[in-house]
Image (tube, rainbow, N blue to C red; front, side, top):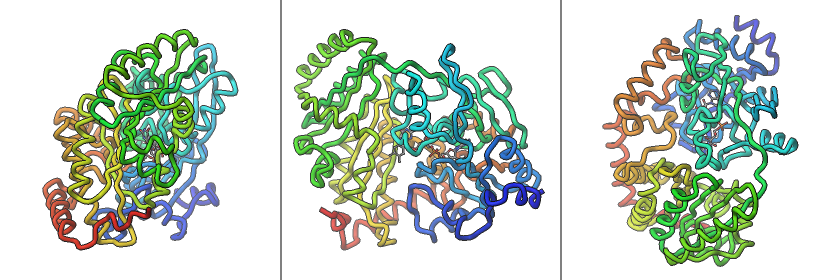
Amino acid sequence: MLDQIKQDFGPRYTESYFERQFYTRDLAYIPNFLVSLVAKPLPEMVVRPVNAEEVSRIVTFASKNKTAVTPRAGGSTAVGGCVPANGGVVIDLNGLKGVVELNLDQEKVTVLPATTWAELDSYLRQQGYCVCSYPSSINAATVGGWLSGGGYGMGSIRFGPMVEQVSSLEVVLPSGEIKRLNRTTDPPLQWFAGSEGTLGIITQVEMKIRPIPESMGHYLIAAENSKALLQAARECVSELPDIIHNMHFNSKLLNDSLKRKGLTEEKLGDYHSLAIDLEEKNSSGLDETEDFLQKIVSKYGLAFMDQEIAMEEWETRFQSLKIMRVYPCLLGAEVLLPVASFHRYVEQVEALGRRAGVKMLTYGHVVSREGAVVMTLYPSDERQTWRYLCDTSLMREIYSIGRRLDAIPYLTGFWNTPYVKDIHSRKKLRELKRRKNLLDPGDIMNSGKVYRPPLLLQPNLYHLGMKTLGLVRRIWPKGVESHDRQ
Ligand SMILES: Cc1cc2nc3c(=O)[nH]c(=O)nc-3n(C[C@H](O)[C@H](O)[C@H](O)COP(=O)(O)OP(=O)(O)OC[C@H]3O[C@@H](n4cnc5c(N)ncnc54)[C@H](O)[C@@H]3O)c2cc1C
């Protein structure tokens, strides 16, 4: 079977060590020796199918041989979800790209899974339509990858997580069977949303689209006090959930670091900022909303930034990692947080940074009336392995702050498996495991992810290890700020 696959796939099949190496990591850098203690990230082979039938052939082969399968698309995550935990086959899905069908009457598009959000949106805009929501990693993130993960991003306040826009899926199940799913099939498509590639491989997505909005308004509100700004954010999102397209917070420390490299407006560097981007059917609707925003700004003692600065923030909304031009090596933690706790999270994480002698740079998107996806990054230096390892202990402390404020890690993948019992309630986890056992009894599909940690990442061991690294970090003579490349 494998010989036939090799022959048919030709250069789209590889066992080359050089080529396989590229699949041993995602956005996060983890020192090799540490990864190999807990996982087998080097796949034995990588294949690049171009249609569902080819995906099915590989999965059938893997299923018969009890070989692990790791689906990978944009590779734009940092929790090890698209990196093998147990070797096996990586299915690089980037050959499954493009629009299959556009139905403007029903406002639906059917698309192949490795189409990036930028590719899909620009295709739709040529027809006068656009996507409802998208991740801020629009240029790298794929439709299948985002559906398999959290599915929250820009547009989510109004349209909900991505799964709410999906009406049908084609998936290759761990048995190799190709199945078309909707909300009432067995299994329903909802099982695959957020399953992080552990239940099957999504090979087609049918989803809702919408006409390009007629009017947009961009506002940037600034404040020295993050509490007032984030309380204002909370009030805005509960009053205007149907017209807010995007609500993005940047902490003062982040703006200040960007300012120093000329990567944001000079004026913005002294403030926390909140970008609010609105969509309306017509501009008179926007005028009314502007009055509301004006009242909020006065009520909380905030200030509007100039319109040009607001426009610049909008135009650079996909560049949240430009901070890497200031700090080329960043560690970080991302949480899904109640909006009500957002300001306390920022205060407490910054206090942690002061104690630890490191800048905690926070940004986040409000994604619903209740929740925000919030990323905290801090500088380190991957060239100094032990220093870097000790710095990872701060990720645990950020998650601990989040936990006290009812936040959970945003994705699980491999590296957040020690938190799996925090991420899901006991009942939910039992149900997720039931689905996994039902569809993938041999545990081949993205095995080693999501449901339980490997031995060395068991919560007790993990927390002990992290605490020890934290202690070592405290007595380490050289502070991380020495890597500040100002
Ligand atoms: C600057 C930046 C901004 C970001 N903004 C957001 C954001 O706003 N919202 C957000 O949710 N995330 C965000 N992310 C994280 C990431 O980009 C997204 O989650 C993205 O959707 C992942 O898609 P991908 O194609 O890169 O998937 P990958 O990283 O390749 O894979 C992610 C997971 O999905 C699985 N998978 C991929 N494709 C399939 C498939 N077809 N079938 C089954 N499983 C599959 C993989 O096995 C893996 O577990 C951001 C990242 C960066 C760097």
